Amino acid sequence: SQQGEEDPQALSIQEGENATMNCSYKTSINNLQWYRQNSGRGLVHLILIRSNEREKHSGRLRVTLDTSKKSSSLLITASRAADTASYFCATERLSNFGNEKLTFGTGTRLTIIP
Amino acid sequence: DAMVIQNPRYQVTQFGKPVTLSCSQTLNHNVMYWYQQKSSQAPKLLFHYYDKDFNNEADTPDNFQSRRPNTSFCFLDIRSPGLGDAAMYLCATSRTVTGAVQYFGPGTRLTVT
Image 1 (cartoon, each protein chain N blue to C red):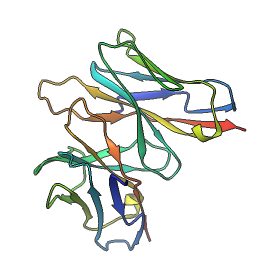
Image 2 (image 1 turned 90 degrees about the vertical axis):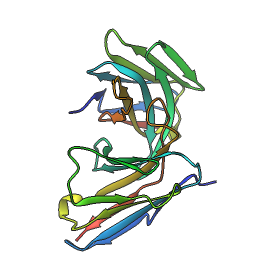
Image 3 (image 1 turned 120 degrees about the vertical axis):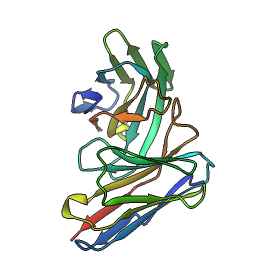
Image 4 (image 1 turned 45 degrees about the vertical axis):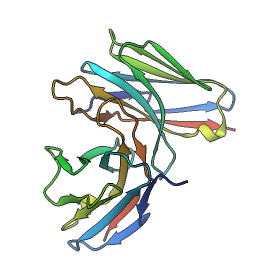
């Protein structure tokens, strides 16, 4: 079953605007990660946020995590045409076995209009 | 500088004809993963290796097999490809299974005719 669900499924904005994508998940997690995927390519890691963290920044990226709501958001500020890609959240669930793996959400397709 | 390399980038095979996809890494990571990704869908984990320890996902079809002859290389074998196996196959690596970032290769696009 899908652990992460991104919202919206697709987003188109003008270059220079901010883009916000949301991720909701179902079970308690160790950490949550965001990845970017350009069309026809592999995924690239953006940010990892642990369950005891509420916010992280990396350049123009800002990620928040609300474990009480089981949700996360990815904000890209001052968007550029090169930000056009699909963005996936991935959750690592809590486990007693120590062998959990990432489960990817359905992704948000972001298009930046020059 | 390539860290996770996948060959070939595009593979065409015939229905039922065995095919092997390869992945190599220069990161010396312990863990290697194979994902299947169909159009506009999330990557779906097929299996992973922690060193030589193979971990199959419960819903991975028997048609899919994997080999890891050494730390650097990992192969995905599809014994009898069906039309439904056409997809992007992504290889990834990480230092550990838990709490670690995954590094992905560029993927192999498999077409089944």
